[in-house]
Length: 193
Image (cartoon, rainbow, N blue to C red):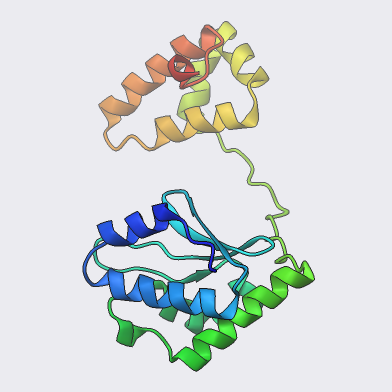
């Protein structure tokens, strides 16, 4: 007896008409290949679990997707792209291919294989504070001292906020506000913390 979840039933019923046959077809295949699979809803989307996450099947207004959680390990970029924009059953590869994909996902989970972590950039971007902003900070010793003690993320927030202003008068107002807040030891978004 397959382990189904009534929330997945409700999700499929509420999905767009084009998505219902796709989601039902995928659901039947997953249960046929892995009878021990469990269904659940995570992040508002149907997920299929067996010794970890196997697959997610989100449906959107104009397309749905068939996402293999560890797809990076066995799907090419083209194969992943093909499965990310489904608008009809004909967009799915044949059942033989899908069966192979699902079986591979089950095999990886049962073997305890984890996808490789994504490498983080080793070089940190240096924060470049524009001269006009530094000049305004230097006019207020308290603001300059506070700014120098801020964390890099708080400094970056202020610099980006000031530099992304398109008009000169907007930039001037932002600098004035920034210097006042920084002198008070406040981060840019202090109201929301």
